Amino acid sequence: MKATIETDKIVSQRQAIGIMIVLCAVMAAFIGGLKAAPQVPLLLCLLCFIVFGMWMKSPWERVEKALRDGITPGIPAIFIFILIGVLIAVWIASGTIPSMLVYGLQLLSSEYLLVTSFVLTLIVGSCIGSAFTTVATIGVALLGIGHIYGIPLPLLAGAVISGAFFGDKMSPLSDTTNLAASISGVDMFQHIRHMMWTTVPAMLISLLLFLLLGNQVQAQVESQQISVIVETISQVAFIHWVTLLPILVLVVLAWKKVSAVPTLLAGIVAGLLLLFFTNDTVTWSSLVGIMQDGFVAQTGVEEVDRLLSRGGIQSMMWSVSLVLLSLGLGGLLQEFGVIQRLVEPMLGVASRAKLIFSTALSAIGVNVLIGEQYLSILLPGKMFKDRYEEAGLDSVNMSRVLEDAGTVVNPLIPWGVSGVFVSGVLGVSTLEYLPYGFFCLLCPVITMVCGVTGWGILPKRAQSTDRSQKVH
Image (tube, rainbow, N blue to C red; front, side, top):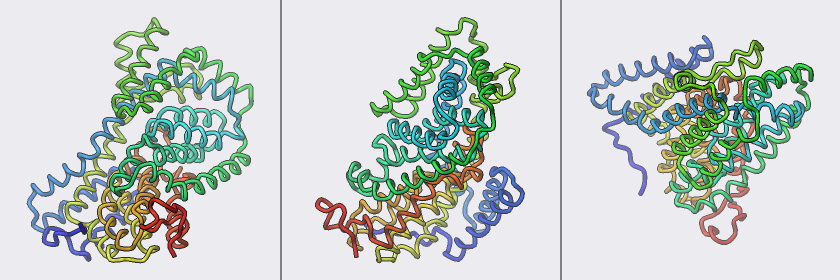
């Protein structure tokens, strides 16, 4: 069934373009010009849109419903944010993250830390299918190691994010992988195999870039300073292989396809049990404080205190406020048909290259305008599915484009749900790590190149026979 638009309920195309220009100008002026946090410009955009709705004589109930509908899909992510804040604090207190730091400093060299971080997060992300969990656990430890070595954190964050979102894109356990396959009506494993056409080149190029950059980055600390930091961490935290068991709990539950919330809760409980068994001085009062406000280290060594003082529910409130504002604005854009109007001129395209370009740009546009990863797959998927059939292209081509330009682009958007989460957990702003998120930058480019060249494009008739046949 073809996508239809109820023109009596939404803005005109000229109005949609005008709204987009105003929103982009406000965001650019505040974030790019004033170097402000995204919350204030997002709030101003919300107010402008509400005034616009009043000018259109839309009832307040419609605006309120749009805000509510926009925020509702983000509630599970917000809950995950809060749980991960608690998880980080508990894992620091129980010795899990300090042990990863100590073992990492002992095993990983600064010269290969970038490429090692990319590979490790790629493996872990693929195993558990969650970029959020990968970034919040092994990613936090790797950033801590990089901070001690004096490696530029935006560069290291780019490696961590590239690996983590490789897993989010390619793992059969990932929500986005299942969603892209489902909305396109294709088998999930066929979808994963087809993504190899763009994912493998992006991975190899990223690997080469991180290897080259790693060789140019020199550690800014001496081995003696590393020894002092390791010794200090060992004095204030329980360093033992048993502290890594909560990580094993997460991996096992992920493999059993347990949902994210119970998996994170199990990781928190495992950390709490470990803490009570290994630290007889912990009290319920101190534990509540750690879970609420995060773990606070007081070692007297500034570097260690900075590394270990983090986590807690309150640490995620900055991210939660940004997500609420972003999704609220996205709900208004969707309700008033701004996105539909902007995409409408692309719906008539028929050629292979234009169709893939339009799908990719639509997914990127939804990420930019709404900031929601799932909607960047759902909305273009619903709009363009029939167009692929009309063009004689297999739907697996669309499912790949949705992941290449939807899933992995979201962490590059400062107000996107993934971008907000990553920057909040790693302590590196989105615009700082964006130039180094090579894998996330390369995937949409390569998918468009495939659209132009026909490389890795399946015609509809070749769905079950020749997966490598091109469309000419």
